[in-house]
Image 1 (cartoon, one colour):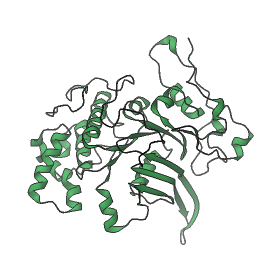
Image 2 (cartoon, helix red, strand yellow):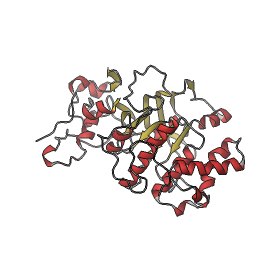
Image 3 (tube, one colour):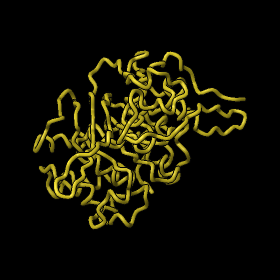
Image 4 (cartoon, one colour):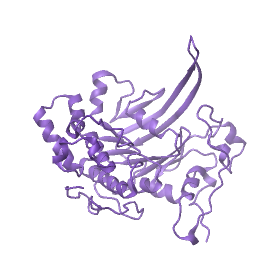
Length: 373
């Protein structure tokens, strides 16, 4: 499927990769050779402070009025360093994708501040916001719905250049072929339409479009969730190769904990619009301190029957973001909950450099999920 030579030292071949998601495999060099916590000495590329998004629900036949609010994202703060991948995980409906779109200003935040390369971009409009798009791009989840079926691949890939302007038609044609080669697709296929490609190939086209303007930051919004496992491995390897070659930073949104562990430097766990734990991946996967990440990791199947994990018990259902519970939003499902959890919202506080937890009793909950022999 790919005519492109692999960039990383140990990728799987593009035409038939096995699983590349083994957590023990070493990350590629070039900016991902160490875990990055919040204690990095260089300023982050992206800094988000108190990001909030509430969607109003209106009713009324003649005069509409607000009757409720969906609290999709509430007071979320995090950073992404240069050349870093921050994984964002959580259950469906917890606000992950909304957070990614808020960062890119695809939807407007209710409150909060977004700093990109030290500049406050929260209030940018018009030409200033369009210029920002050169540096911040997105890869969507659905490789079928994200591409216009009436456009050729060349038109799709160079569309960001058309919007930004300043590029001749001849240069766009050359750039389209260069981008196709960069993502591992034959340059001769630029005249084809999206329906002539497989799902994995379409996602490669989506990635080519995202990097057309040479961005520094890319949101990967469930970029591999709709693909087969072997194709997921190909796309993950491609993203790592491009990160190494182009110096990209990623916000990688996903459900699959194995994929997130493979590609991420740090991981943030989200629950009902709040971040509950942020740490480097080694710490989060071996010694989570919040009961919710502990339950997520304990639920991952283990191949050996004698190494089955004892899962922390989660009771009840996920509350509605229309009416989130007071205090800690996880307290109704947490076996450790006490009265303070029902009344006071736990702050996302540092337990160690680069490891933040939003739990009143985080000091009690350390250690990996227990295993039963």
